[in-house]
Image 1: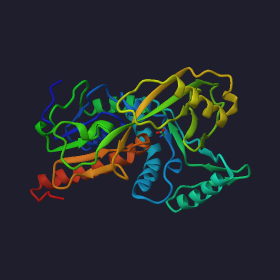
Image 2: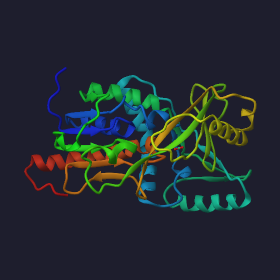
Image 3: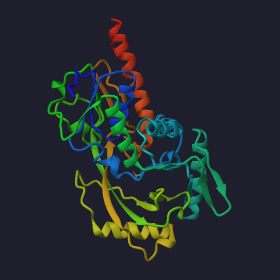
Image 4: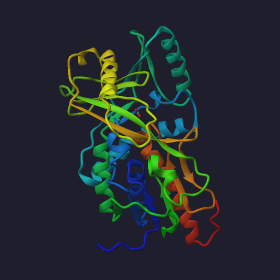
Amino acid sequence: MRFQQPDVIVVGAGIIGSSIAWRLAQHGLRVQLREAGRMGCQASSAGAGMLAPGGEVDGPSAFGDLLVESLRLYPDFVGELSSATGIQIDYHQCGAIETAASGNGWIALQARARAQAAMGVRSEVRGDHSLFYPDDAIVDPIGVLSALRLACLTLSVEILEESPVGRLDALDAAAIVLAAGAWTSSIVGAPAGIPKSFPVKGHLIGYDLLQGSFGPIRRCGHTYLLQRGNGFTVAGSTTELKGFDTSVDAAIVDQLRGRAEALYPPLKGLTPVRSWTGLRPGIDAPEPSIGRLAATRYWLAYGHYRNGILAAPATAARITAGITSSLETVSRGLPNNL
Ligand code: GLY
């Protein structure tokens, strides 16, 4: 197929960039989606797929609001992707049980839940000194990525894999979206002054358990467990600053195994069938960069750190609304220097 000159080039085909490309194409824009490796091959496919603002933000903030909005958008996001592609996505609103490791931790958890209620995150105190977050959900990111690929292709998005951009300033399009996760700020020609992006490594392990045997997500601090529809049960995670190293460390896997067993004792004696790592997109700023870099053709969509899977629908909605209205302004000959 011959592709025409794109209106928008999206740099980075993880779940954020791919969702943006899909939404832009739905608005009739010609979109090129560029990826240095394979679509979704980094943080997006490594992610556990926990859709849980309550486990991630302590109280009201702009990013917290985006996460809550994104969680609300998720059922329609996956439903629309499934109907557009025929791909069934493993998504369940299973809720989450959060426990504390100590008495003081339990007091802090309840205080946090009260602060979270102010931002629309619902939780209930249970008799066994745990909190239940009824709105939390899980999704298999690999299913979302497969559907995004097909949905993008159906709308004639030009997907270029194994295709690093070279110099950003040499790209020819009216708008360029920077959505390359941990790599974003180091792309050659990246605009000066954008927050630095960097990788934050996390180890995960997975067990084959009986389908339907687990129930809600379980969390305690930064240890979490969730089960996919097929019974595969994921335990995470770690937070490591090791550059772009993705190797699996057996000692860290053992520690994670211990934490997972403490949180869910039936895992004792079971051996994980898989262990892997991912590079979360860290950012040298309090919140991700989402929006236009003022008075330029660059749109920033990176730095989602632990929440890229959750934040994809709302990030795509915001970037798409911004780009479509800015390109409409240009086509109507109005000043476009937001
Ligand atoms: N979202 C969970 C994690 O990054 O480990």
